[in-house]
Image 1 (cartoon, rainbow, N blue to C red):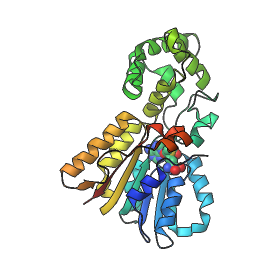
Image 2: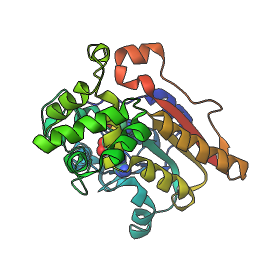
Image 3: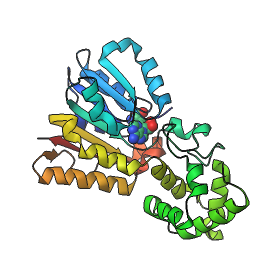
Length: 292
Ligand SMILES: C[S@@+](CC[C@H](N)C(=O)[O-])C[C@H]1O[C@@H](n2cnc3c(N)ncnc32)[C@H](O)[C@@H]1O
């Protein structure tokens, strides 16, 4: 079960009011959406999207009784402007993006996100595009190294890419656990037995690359005026420093251009209690703006 991150802080900042229309671009386990629905009440409405059809079906089933107040679509959040046009919906009073993956997805072995569960090396939120296995077995050594460096800040990126190419020549790398073994074997011995699995950053980098995660964030944040109305609030929770940088830069541009005001002078981080209760929240950062 996914525990929503920075829930109280996000709701306080988005400040959904009775009768308002909100968009949750990343439904996941629906924790934030449920809290938004409670605030917007019977006269309000929610559009929820998730690229993962399992998340969408689950949320639809759980919220059937809410009828037309909840519209759910299995889509990439970058398509929200098109969905609004197609469904003849107005611009929203608020938009939330809680980036990355959910605990439900990590724990699902067949989605291939985690080295802790043996499954196919897949890592796609939606069943479209190249799988992680196709990337790992198909890209050139330098391309793999660049992915691990750019999206994972992995300082052993070159050694890891070299080892992958050596191993895949013998046998294609097709499962999460095999991939984790190959990655770990490229590290100097003293790095292999720490608290954190040595493959952590490489898994993160590959997931970001496979799903074009940074491009998706750039796209939606570049099109906010097509989905959020003047006075509307936009909140983004990110879990990766480069992703947070994208959000920060885009929000700053809007503020400088007089098109938004910042609602978080500094990014909001989880409290120590939240990190203790939910260690997954430890790298979370919440930034928000209000469009003028
Ligand atoms: C951290 S979870 C959201 C958790 C949710 N806020 C909750 O409280 O349960 C992120 C979700 O975003 C989805 N996702 C990732 N990239 C997406 C994209 N480009 N478009 C739509 N959904 C995406 C994932 O499938 C995942 O379910």
